[in-house]
Image 1: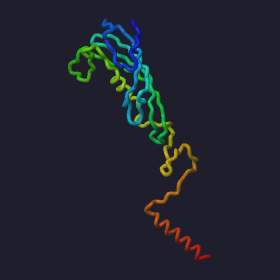
Image 2 (image 1 turned 45 degrees about the horizontal axis):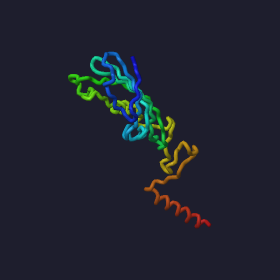
Image 3 (image 1 turned 180 degrees about the vertical axis):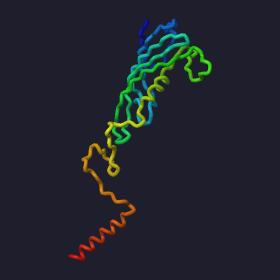
Image 4 (image 1 turned 135 degrees about the vertical axis):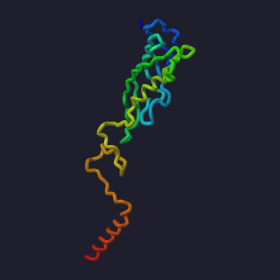
Length: 188
């Protein structure tokens, strides 16, 4: 049996007091997550303050509760090649067991607090970060920036180029130019 309950906005903390403890019973919640800073990586992240709807199903099991959280969020960042702004959609569907008591030999297991409260933000953070591309691109064929003028190569004509002289050879190039000018004066 499932019943959907609204929970206060900006809250990813759920009380288990309203969840029936009969094994197999599920209670569903619709949460509004006000995203804090730092959900992501330096290259891509969810915008701080974004409001993300989260659907949570809590099912009673023998050892505690099974929590399933689902949401869609926009990851914002910059292309690592051309620095254009990009937005990628992430679909999160994560299930985690919260135990009534710490299981023996499993220090990483999540345990229900003494107040029967669950904070789901760490669960969502841990589900979102692996979805982030560590080298996000605006497109698979992005050529990046011109190393000389800094313009996007995708926006420049194909014959775009710069005459670049190695700084170690600049004095020789100047000497060659001077000799060519002098040679032209001698002939004239």
